[in-house]
Image (cartoon, rainbow, N blue to C red; front, side, top):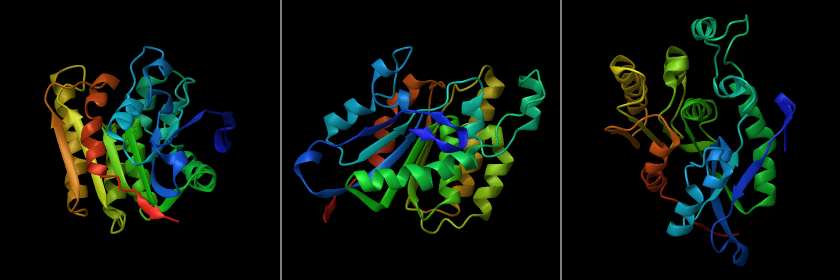
Length: 255
């Protein structure tokens, strides 16, 4: 599918639950980022994915999952998932005058106005049950999306989120957002997500800060700190049962 704001063809992967073809039920939809890493190990270059297809098959989860492949060209994933430019990081990381971040709004508008209508028209979806989940920068984006469209994404999971990239901005955005329509937030992180002891501690504190703000606004919220977990797909994969059980997917009655 063409990602209109970026004029790039990208694969959209759709998982349909067991029994979908035989019935007429409506299903909630979970939108996930980095789609090439979501479902199967064979889709990933290094052979490690979130393994979500196996989990969904084994647990007969009643949900449609849409995995949106991310942009693997240069720093475009950073640009698309980050709502605001990080000038300081850009200056230290990029050797030219380009800035990183700031294109998440375009990516989100594509999801809302182009992708979701296609999914809702093609599949039997319950349009009041749209959820989102992401890892690392995908977690930052998912929280941003929920704050931007709280009436659309009513449950969100953010695993090991790179809030640090836009820390002050995302905190301020959460504070200013009306999240009354949100039904639940799931957040987690590991204690070894960093290159040294200070960065590992800072990463956890980054998550705590966002959790604290959200917990003042949302009653149904869970925050897990996983001892010894690093920042990689294998670590994220082990937490799939935690956030999927938090979502508590239920089938909506027939049309």
